[in-house]
Image (tube, rainbow, N blue to C red; front, side):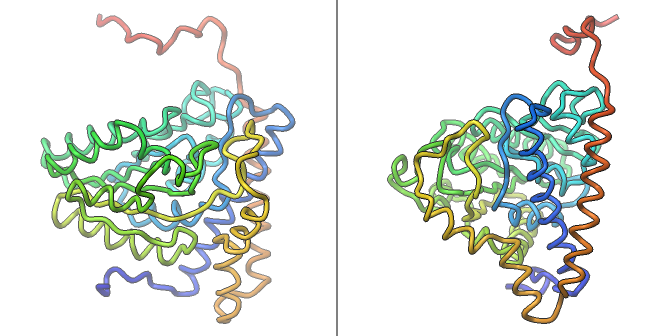
Length: 329
């Protein structure tokens, strides 16, 4: 590992990593509560257990770099800097939402932060990332596009098409597979003859590696290597983050396909508990500091809820806006 690839684990940086993960987790806990109250409607896919991936990868990117996420993208949006109030207002369907209330939980978007957002289609962001990478190549712009997707996407045709074109055209894309072992209700081992997903990328001659997706420091180190490689070579890189979602696939999911004991065993290795315990054991963070983080996050969530509750509904007469392009004058 090159020196530049190593995360600088100062107290400040350690607290930042921990705070970012806690912020995602507590926000989504609140979203689950609001969903049961029918304040949030439609589908809701939570990131519980996978926070180390977004927190480890996204801050390594530059402001001009692009991010394409999945429908489990609340954490990605928050880490990228999309205001929590705008994210929650979007889930409420309010005009103040980051997608003007038209996208909901699965379609968060913020062009000002180069956050190209979620996609309700499994693997649907992969071709978009290829398009963004191709645009950078044609314009000779030095940007990286980070594309997040789940293990379920590897069974889709666009996964193979996208990796093939990215390799063929030497596109500056960082592919980040959030392998949480289950695609909706189907275990990876029941759908893929090759479950070592990084090897699929190697078949397209794309540099690839796997990392413990429950270890935020390991993810950040791998992300630094990957981003540096993309910038230096202009070629794609594939990062498989082996993680686990602790909640169901969505709030509609009865979760009958996996054993409760399995979930509990993974819960003991979840990234927030794991990292905070390590920091405290090494006297880098004290319990009072963690309590202050929790308190600050709780206050931010309270403000976000108030912002969403006070938001406005789009007038019915605007229903057909943005459906078709406006005629040129």
